[in-house]
Length: 256
Image (cartoon, rainbow, N blue to C red; front, side, top):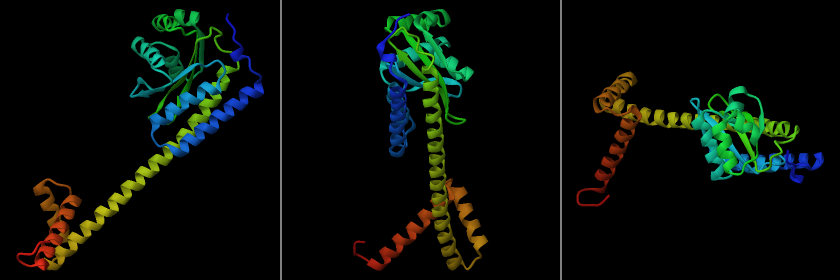
């Protein structure tokens, strides 16, 4: 089996690089709210976190269908695609079994013939994938590619798993923040809608000398008749009143 000085760094150096990679990921999480951009950051940093990694991708599952959310190059994204088309490969095995998968090019050709053949032609020699679970909607694997034939050391899989676990924790927290932010926006929108509906009800109550329930029923009936949402109808109703009042105040012949 081929060896490389690139993978024989002292453990303290390796751990320092993992720590640095995690710190950079944390910085990215504090700046970015786009999942795909964050996945790209993961790819860039994992190459520094695990000795021997030359390229990396992130596979995510959408309704059980895999796709490459991010990659360090188009080459490895294409090799991911070969796995998806064949339904076999290290990233799919890692995602399916929830266990780390590592293999040399020779092992890959035996286990996943289509992927192994394409990878050899592309100059890849070793593969390492660990399962990634962000939440119920986002799972998959972080995948490492190496041009060396070392098959990765025994320590490399735990290192990638350590990094992946940290990524999962960070992304789960980030996902919860985004869901909370989205919910807050929805609540703010609901409150704005409620306010304008109440305004429209107040006008109708004053003009027609009716109760709040009767005013609301008038708005509902008009909303259904015009096939528009209630808050949209209320906003238009108030806007029309404001325009009419401004026109009246300007007087005939004057521009508003």
